[in-house]
Length: 290
Length: 242
Image (cartoon, rainbow over all chains, first blue to last red; front, side, top):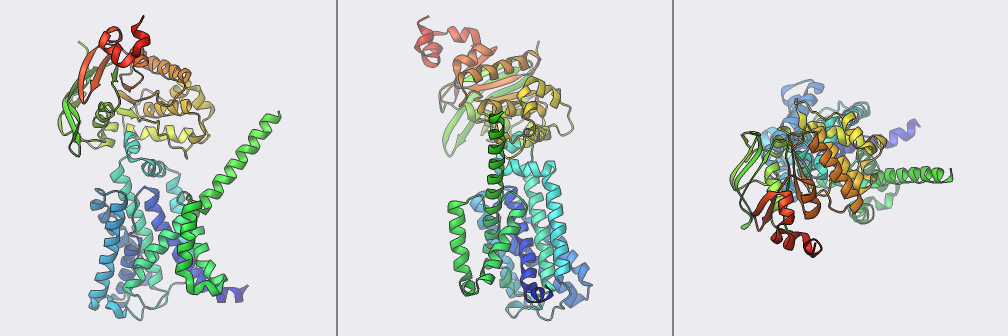
């Protein structure tokens, strides 16, 4: 078992971080926002945490907290101009935001190290911290889902006009979702900074956008378990079938197309729906026998 | 002198150059049950959407209990007690019946509702029976009752209904209208948009006929139901030959 863990602990950490980014992506989509800002928000969290510790000598837990807060704040600020946009326009605007963050990372050499990267970040975070952060995030998201805010998200995602006819403020709840998304992305970005030794602006570019979106679409957009299952499948698949690892991106593409065409709800939500239908059918059968 | 709950004056609305409303004026007094009838595309739904704030009126004034509504965010309109039962019911299929009803209380935001969960469940007993079921598993008529119940949870001072008979079996339509009449008898002010003109005129006190973005007839529902032009245009030949 311990051997197994030594071999795979890196993969497990990648999974934990990936799940964090997936949940950051999930929470905005849950509130009906088509944002891809997660990558940029994660970059802000990661760079903020790394810079505070390497340049100012802050203790790393404090730096990670600062990264989380800066991510939250950026998410909230971002929600102000985005409140006027909808659907694919939101996606394009957030894509531009991610590109801006990448560009700033590349050009402000003195602060971020530019394209060479921000080096010599101490390795201070491991599986334990990642796992703790993921569990806390899941707990918070589940708790929110059970409240009126969770139902308001559901209403907005279904139809904004209906949500506002119920007195649900679309602007407020979408800002809240952006803030949450920024907090989660900032937190996991900060954690990642202290386990990779080097940060490159492009780590948080188009690749992460596609990855985070794929995790959510594959796993499912409704339940909290969806993005985590999606991450697990997409990260573990290329590892268990080594020959495919080189074609990871092609594999992602094929899986995404198949899922969107045949299982638009994603794996977890489709599974839950199937179980519920079976339970109802069994109940109906039992009733008709009586 | 009864108090005016809603007063719409010369409201215009346009989508990308098409004038959907060309100056509509109407008013609803407290305790009234008013219908808005007219053909497809006349602007009935646009007017309701202007009232609820989803579509912004390009001109005119909408006063609700004396306060101007034009320019108010739609969720703030609901919070003032102008609640809409949207076209096609639009219940949240993935939430339970109880959760749907509880969500309706968001619009209260501190106000008190005359309609408690218990009262709504006694008005529509099926909602109590199916309380923990997914709203999506209800039949069309039950979903319409849930949509009305959900709006009642928000403490309406004026209830707007957009085509409540849409897609429902005739026997269910009668049930829905009976429930609305009962609510009105208890004092609820209702403004109804309906294509089923006969059903609407049979149930309401007053009606407006809207055509091409203008009010073309108005009056007591009973009088309008006997008006030859209204009969010819909206009630069909069956009624005209009586």
